[in-house]
Length: 376
Ligand code: SAH
Ligand code: SF4
Image 1 (cartoon, helix red, strand yellow):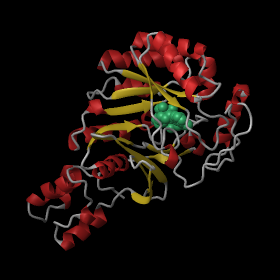
Image 2 (tube, rainbow, N blue to C red; image 1 turned 120 degrees about the horizontal axis):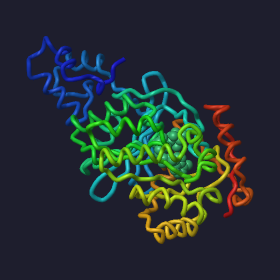
Image 3 (cartoon, rainbow, N blue to C red; image 1 turned 45 degrees about the horizontal axis):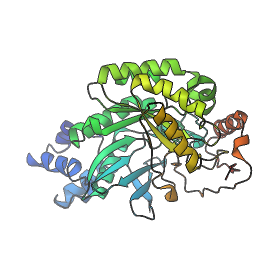
Image 4 (cartoon, rainbow, N blue to C red; image 1 turned 135 degrees about the horizontal axis):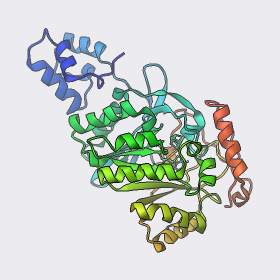
């Protein structure tokens, strides 16, 4: 089944070949400018609306919509045509809005601290399934302009390269969203970064680093065993040289794991030569990972260490934690996040991280019962 946003303009013209010439433009503008699906185009004759509605179905069916207590963050749970589920998050700011989209149903990368990684991989999203998330969010954001699109929802965008890139091109050409306002976040899929460097559109690149020495990163981010830091940093350099865009390094601050002065110095050594900006995200709680985010004073200390070392770093606000819409919390299943605090996290060993990741990959899709440690 083709989604409404999978169709090209010439294909639409073919579908409408027995209609007056202006119809193609009318339907095209309805889709891309007004963000309306054919079945809701009340300006079309009923018969045509029904025919088009049956041929070009929506790719996303809303299962649930949650709004944060301050009303500024909305999370959708969508069902796809085959029953799989994905999530999209819209964040409102005073004068603009940002949407965080999913690129895959689930994720195969197995990062133990991430709810999507804990649930395992379902399938790649189609171009239309990606684009329709943005179209829906743009309509919801009105009267604010949808300023930014970040591929930081479920999935690894560079492991679904072709479709992600086609979606980026459509956002640029058909929705008028400049490439400079689109950010692809990757856990470090090096061939994808190299390929991005050859594309015409200069999108922003965010690399989820979380550890700046291989020994630790191997445990936090399993993909590091395939593309270790030296190789990853080389690919980032290539991207910068080709595109001249600013690189961001993402750092989920995990209590007692990657929040020491040593971690800050190692991070500075990688960030400084690349002129990279560091985004610190205190780890958001997820059901299947046995530790929590660094407490506020530790976060402030980590940022200050980076600042003293000359690194430009900001702490990213945790938007939507009360509706499980924050970074890494998207899990596509409506299940409660139950956290139990039991033991000091400072005592957590790397083996716990490995056990957690192994558990996630050994039993994908099964709900995990959480026993969380924390120093608090
Ligand atoms: N797969 C891509 C994009 C989706 S994840 C990637 O990993 O970059 C988007 C961001 O959320 C990444 O920076 C990821 O490291 C971060 N993240 C995942 N789980 C998190 C958690 N529990 N708390 C905070 N950030 C998390
Ligand atoms: Fe996948 Fe990114 Fe989550 Fe890792 S952090 S499991 S790459 S979505």
